Length: 207
Ligand SMILES: Cc1cc2nc3c(=O)[nH]c(=O)nc-3n(C[C@H](O)[C@H](O)[C@H](O)COP(=O)(O)O)c2cc1C
Image 1: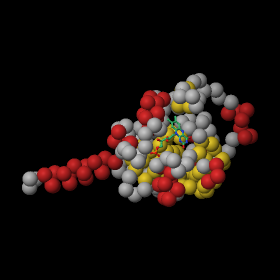
Image 2 (image 1 turned 180 degrees about the horizontal axis):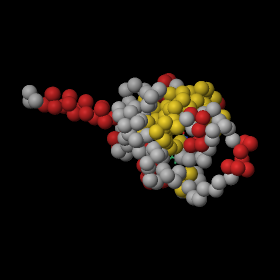
Image 3 (image 1 turned 30 degrees about the horizontal axis):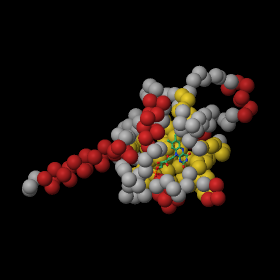
Image 4 (image 1 turned 45 degrees about the horizontal axis):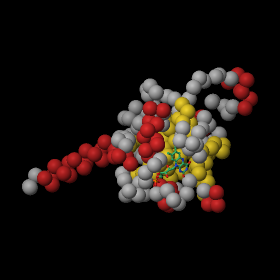
């Protein structure tokens, strides 16, 4: 009985340390924020993490768009999702980009609510402390973009986000992105075609 309290406290400390590793310790590299749009432009299904200070949560989003090379994005969502309250109150989130080996997790995360369940525990997702926002990075994903809410267009459920830091996982083997058709089927990335030379006049410097 006398021992159970200290051991319990130790277990909690260990669990918290595991959840607060920094991006470099988790094998992530910084991506210049001016290149972050290249993570969203292919139109992948993404995970969006939030934190209200008491609970971290994660949802699936397939309705995304790039608004500017300078790391401005939009996602479409609404108050029927538990994430919405934390997203609009903290005005922060992380966009995490999964590869196709996480397809079942992506579907699972998008078909249950943080209102009822701790999704990080349920799906065994590893959280990593973000640099600028309280919402966690997801170590299991290919890339993560820390974002601040720039605007909310309530009439259309559009959340405009400014990317402020981006992290990529260069050592990850499976790199094919997930694309949702919208009818419950999904497509994984196929072959990549290089037309950089022809596109040069339309590409921002350094991309
Ligand atoms: C493949 C897929 C794509 C989804 N895309 C969106 C989306 O673009 N916008 C949205 O609001 N919800 C989307 N959802 C639904 C949310 O992820 C879902 O309602 C989730 O349970 C919300 O979690 P929360 O209540 O913990 O916030 C999608 C779900 C799946 C499975």
